[in-house]
Image (cartoon, rainbow, N blue to C red; front, side, top):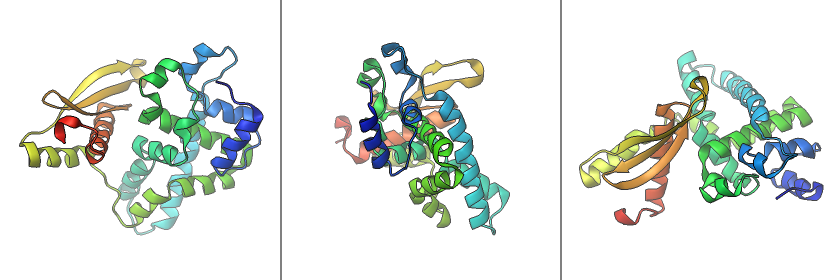
Length: 238
């Protein structure tokens, strides 16, 4: 699948951003798995690198200016939540980005469109495109709009989410046992590993997640488990 300019124009409108550089937008929506299916394709990894930095600056500046009564430690924890993979992935979903990302058929079939890391990376790549094409102020407005929900939680001090604890409280309450987190894969170089972890209850798969650390992956797996339970996606628990 390739986007033409008219399709990309529709994508930009749907994302509510005034992007003119459609080549950059196309790149932001291209996962590395797609490179094997198109000789001209460029992955969004470089854009993700830039977008991550711009996102961090905008969020840090917002928290610093809005919450003058909070300590450095409180601000650091708030920022970590606001730019976390689950939050960014949820923002990408709210924008409908999961249906826009170009990826290989194999990645798609294995659930790539719902993988938190892919969604979060595409969201950061999109931020880089807006920054390069529209400037910092437009980027700031986009980020604050996209992260409005979590920023409101931070204002109410309701942003600290420990999904592992929430999941354990649920399973302990119903089944008198805690979930087990199993590392199923480690990918990447030693300095840039990605961990894939599954949350299990005996032989029941509750959820899976990825992260740059085991702790992050466990939190992502616990979050997916909670979502699966809430949506009744685990037949053994219904």
